[in-house]
Amino acid sequence: MKTTAPFFLFWQLNILVDTGSSNFAVAGVPDPDVTSYFNTALSSTYKSQGIDVTVKYSQGSWTGVLGTDVITIPKGIYGSYTINIATILESENFFLPGVKWHGILGLAYNTLAKPSSSVETFFDSLVRQAKIPNIFSLQMCGAGLPVSGSGTNGGSLVLGGIEPSLYKGDIWYTPIKEEWYYQVEILKLEVGGQNLELDCREYNADKAIVDSGTTLLRLPQKVFTAVVQAIARTSLIQEFSSGFWTGSQLACWDKTERPWSLFPKLSIYLRDENSSRSFRISVLPQLYIQPILGIGENLQCYRFGISSSTNALVIGATVMEGFYVIFDRAQRRVGFAVSPCAEVDGSPVSEIEGPFTTADVASNCVSSVSFHEPVLWIASYALMSLCGIILLILIILLLIPPRCQHRYTDNDMVNDESSLVRHRWK
Image 1: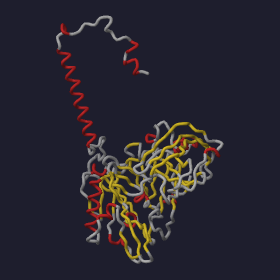
Image 2: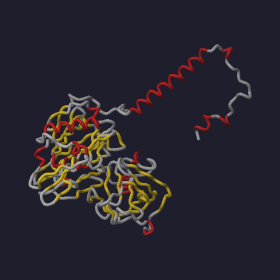
Image 3: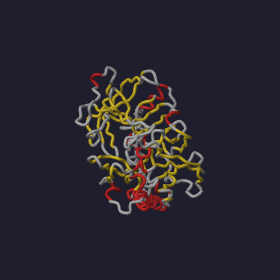
Image 4: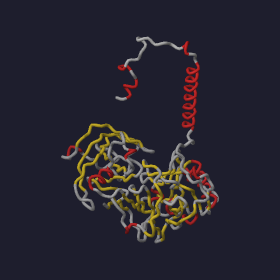
């Protein structure tokens, strides 16, 4: 199935396509910030499950009720299918002024589904009922990009396959490290062709994911600081406001100027399916120095399309707009190819190159447990201490002479009705 991305047309509602969550949810009551909502009373096939569900995102949250409904897809996948859908009854910082969407289509794994992983996701329902291949692909075009040339605003979501017209050149695949988010392995970053020289585990602290629902490229704090320093060092602007890098200020130039020539290219290296090789996806400044606001007739203002993160490296729309991205769940891999809509003034603003050797990086850059979080350190020490105390007690009990041990009477025996073991089986 092919439809517009990042919006998915459904009941005449625009739905945000999100590979970083797993629930399908739409506005179920009127809201000041949405123009339409799904009135379940008007659907003869809707059935409420009466289950409350709350989903929290890095920014915003909503609460609603889980139900099911029957859908038909008019193009590509024919037939009627029953899917889970949550109607949003309350939200906070989710529907915002000026947004053009009325809900969200989560395409990540059922592990992230709320209220539990037993809730079958929209895409899993289609794979099971429509018998389509377990793969989808996404082309995001120009939400923050002044698209020209052969490019067009919008994009495509293809359910069940790959559309050759949506990419140029080869597709490069990187393995999915864990099936919850689309977690991948980042090996290194370069700014203007210069390696940041960080331990590769810093890029994956505590995960690196591909998430179409995140607007910016988000980097762990240490990586973000290194990237900002490298961009500032290699750019042609010697003095730049710190507020621009943190997102609190815009930078403005005359509309006749093209500020992108002042900034370097940014490259992300991903591990190839052949673990001894890597490939790099690169975005030119046209993707991360983003036009936001025009002032008068002469000024155009831009924002920095990269931000810091406390818990992940997130390849969001800032990067994804340069590529056709394939989520091949059947073979547990994510593919990248250059998107033909990623052009400015007729010139491409994204690149893919490879293969490169991985001899200069660790064999595994993804830690099974992140020790960057102090809470995990505390928890680890607490568990180690508890185990030590239990072990000490057992040793003491084993060393106590038999004559000092208590001899049980019939009244002391734990009967089967009160046994903890019995209740653990229930």
